[in-house]
Every structure is written in structure tokens, then in C-alpha cells.
Amino acid sequence: MKTDYDVVIVGAGFSGLYMLHKLRELGFRAHVFEMGDGVGGTWFWNRYPGARCDVESIEYSFSFSDEIQQEWNWTEVMPAQPEVEAYLNFVCDKLDLRRDIEFETKVTALTYDDASWIVETARGRRVTCRFAICATGCLSAPLEPAIDGLHSFGGTTLYTNRFPKGGFDFTDKRVAVIGTGSSGVQSIPVIAQQADELYVFQRSAAYTLPSNTRPLEAGELEELKANYADIRRAQKNSPAGTVRFGAFAAFIPNGPVTKIMDATPQERIKAIDDRGWLGAFLWSDVMFDIEANKAATELYGEMIKRVVKDPDTAASLVPHYPFGCKRVIIDVDYFETFNRDNVTLVDLRKDPLEAITPTGIKTSSSEFEVDVLVLATGFDAMTGSLLRMDIRGRDGRRLADEWAEGPRTYLGLQIAGFPNLFTITGPGSPSVLSNMVTSIEQHVEWIADLLDEMRSTGQTVIEPTTEAQDEWVGHVATFAFGVRVDPTCASWYLGANVPGKPRVYMPYSGGVPQYKAKCDEVAAADYEGFVRT
Ligand code: NAP
Image (cartoon, rainbow, N blue to C red; front, top):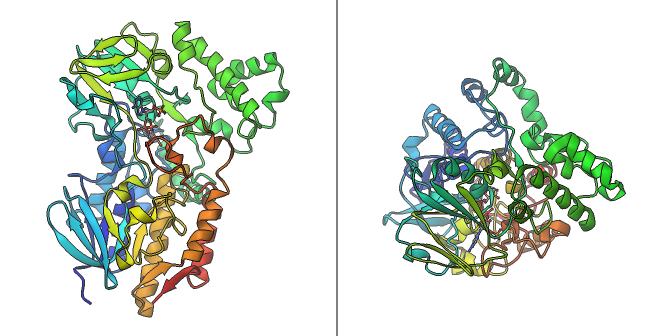
């Protein structure tokens, strides 16, 4: 059967762009649908003030083209949003990708029919393709918080994950920020510098470390570029797909050897005297022993007290859940911001949020009148962007039903019952536990090799077996223990931030090299675990 395209790709972020390029190189007729009016995905939508990557620029970039990595000039160690977005536009222009991207076109449904997929969009377009590839990102389905009166607010409501393109001027404004995950923690210091008054509504305090970002020094970039071959090789062999680790560099390479539980109170304090914030966590038992984890959090609290002058505020800023169960944040002057006269922390664990009113926010003890409400309340992560499309596979089965108890994939790449559908960095792959760009490149190249091989052998349909999928899901689940699934921690890795979402630890935690080895083994064994016809 003739289809409109060989492949339709949903999304024009890092993964969609590289997938398009790779498929075009191989001579496939590929087409991208993108919801935004520009490329970038995460880096297109999350343009809130202070948005910055937590992987170093030199590694948070494509490795597939030496020309691109030599031509592009990063200016900072940890890149800010505008620079990553500009980089992706540069890549897009350099590879002439735009001509195959249909912008402002949201895909609403994917339906499998007769060895092909029907793709429907919100604009009423309906096209067919042999293969459909979801390059929809892990953190791209914005979560609207379930707060009474949310839509009654009469001022300006802004979402960090859909921030206005031209920015927003907070000058002379009374502002409320709800949410203190990465997006809140990064935006709060910048908003505080502009706003008249800033109220920070915190339900869970954050583990955040100074990003230590700085401009790249003269000659530094050139030296890094000269060593790119080694850096890229090392990235691929590193569990997290990154070797330089920015703010977290001190955790690497071999990790600490001393246990906090064996350290005297004086030795613990000396650790933060000598090593600052990292001194709180650089102990070998912190991730393995919950008492050690609590002791580390106490030390972290000591560090906060050293910075935040008001003792009640400092106490409220100490997390109530274990270190390591949520993604650690990088910030610029987050704790220092709470010493400003125009910034107030509202601890929702002591004074719960009751409602949003037409003029502001009501907690159980107070009312806060504000002009602007900034919602930094996160995402329906990893599955949200897939399940918000109506995806129907073989015999009309709905992905939403298949995943009612949590996502099930083979290798995070394909789903039994959904032939010829691929997920780049899908649940069950390292994705968010790694440098996304490293993992994206690995997936794109694996999928491209497969499609190329299928074309050369005349095969048109591929689907994993339920047995292979069950086995993989079971393997991924063996890593869901300890702090990762701590009941006090509402992490999005676990789906615990979304009311009613099944609690399943979604990413694969075995590390990038082990995962890649498994994917390569599967391919070498004639795509073991998949059925091809
Ligand atoms: P998030 O980590 O899920 O944080 C959402 C925040 O909103 C949490 O503090 C949450 O509190 C709060 N919240 C949600 N609903 C609420 C309600 N009804 N009332 C009060 N508070 C509420 O989301 P995010 O900050 O957007 O970050 C998501 C992920 O994106 C990050 O973990 C990271 O992987 C990625 N990201 C990365 C960067 C970076 O690399 N630099 C920057 C931004 C985002 P609870 O914790 O109590 O639920």
C-alpha cells in the first residue's frame, strides 16, 4: 500500500530533528509535525526566566556531526535556554530541516490500519505513513494543578512550561510563584530581581545545588573542541551519558568512600566547611541507607542556615523527603534570594493552599493579593505526551487502556500491539536519568538502522512480543527500590505528582552503556524479542 510518507515524526525537539535528518540521509520520505511555531521542543516551550540546562553545553549537544560541533560556539559552561534554542535553530538551518517540518500542527490521533499509520492533526490534516515515531519528549505535557479557583484569577497567569515568547516584565508587580521544582527554583531568583513583591508557595522544599555556571574562558572552548572525540567516547561509556557533570563533578569519578554514619558530628560539619553544599552528600552510604540520607539532609539544612538569615524560612527550605528520589536541581542564587526584603516563602506544609481567588491566593491562615501568578507545577512526565494523543494499535486497542496500570514497553522503543510505532526515549529507557542528547542519539541511530535493514530485506512490519516486553518491564522494575520509591517523595519519575496516575518507576536505571549494550545485542540477534514480517 502506498502511504503519504514512509515515516511521520511527532515533535521537532532534539529527537525529532535528528530523526528527520537521519531518515532523510537514508532516503526515507519523512515528515515532522510540530505543535509549536519553532523548533526546540522542551527548549522552545520552557523559556521562563532563569531556564538553564543541568548538563554542560559541550555535552548537551549533538555528536553526530563533527562539522556542527566544531562550528557552533557555546558561550557558557551550563547553557541557558536561549542558547540551546538558538543552537537547535542553527542545526535546523545547517541541515535544511525546516522544509520537512509542519509547524503549529498538533497531532491528535495515531491509528494503526493495514500495516500503516493514519496520523490526524488538530488542523484537520490526515496523512498515512508506514512508521510513526513519537519524538514527543519526556517532560512536555504540562500539568495543570488541581487548585480550586485556578481559572478565577483576574490577573496574569503564566506557566513556566508555556512561557510567553517575548518574556514578561515583572517590574512593579506583586507576583506569586507556585511550585519549587527545577522550573520554580530557577525562575524565582530572576523574578525576585524585578518584582515589587514575590511570594513563593512551597509544598515540597527542593534539593538544589549551585550551578557554578560561568562564561567559557578564552581558549577553553577551542581546547574542548579539539578533544571532542575523547569527550564523546567517554560520554557513551558513562552511566549517565555525561562525563563533566558541571555542579555535580565532585561526585565523580569513583565516588566518596567515607560513610556519614561513621563520621562524628565534627567530621560532618568539617565536610561542609571544606566542600560546601556537596559536602552534605559526598558520603558513600547516603543513597543506600535511609538514616545516612537523613543525616545528609540535616547537613544540607546546616548549609541552608548559613545562607538564609531568617531561621523559620531556613527551616522550611529543608526537604522533608530523601535526597536522590527527585531530580537534583541546579540553581543560581536560590537560597540567597530568600534574604531579599521583597521575597516571602509561604510554607504550604504549615499553611495549606486553599484556593486561588480573583485577586490572589488564599491559604488556611492568610490571603495574598497579587498581580501575576506563575505556575511552575510540572508535567505529566514520560507518558503524558503520548497518552494525550489518541493512539490506537492493532485491532483497535487504545494505548491509554494498555497503559492503565503504567507504561509497558520493550526497551522503551516499542509497544506490543502497536506495530511500527516507536518512542524515542520512551518509558523503560535511560532517558531522563541520563544526558538526554546522548540517549536520543542512541535511540535515533538504533531506529534508523532497523528501518534501513527492514527496507533492504523487504520487511514492512515490526512489533515486540508480549513476552519480551513483559521481561523488559520486569527488569526495569528491579531498580525501583530504596529512595526512588520512598513513600514521602512525590516524584514525577514515579508518576506520583499526577493525581490518579499509577505509581510505576518509569525510566531505566541500569545506566547508558548497559542499556546500549542490550539494544545492540538485540539487533545483532536478528532483533530478538521483535516479530518482523
Ligand atoms: P516539578 O519538578 O514536578 O515541580 C513542580 C512543583 O510544583 C513541585 O514543587 C510541586 O510540589 C509543585 N506543585 C504541583 N502542584 C501543586 C499544587 N497543587 N500546589 C502546590 N504546589 C504544587 O516540575 P518542574 O520544576 O517543571 O521540573 C520538572 C522536571 O523538568 C525537572 O525535574 C527536570 O528534570 C526538568 N527540568 C530541568 C531543568 C534543568 O535541567 N535545568 C529545568 C526545568 C525543568 P510537590 O513536589 O509537593 O508535588
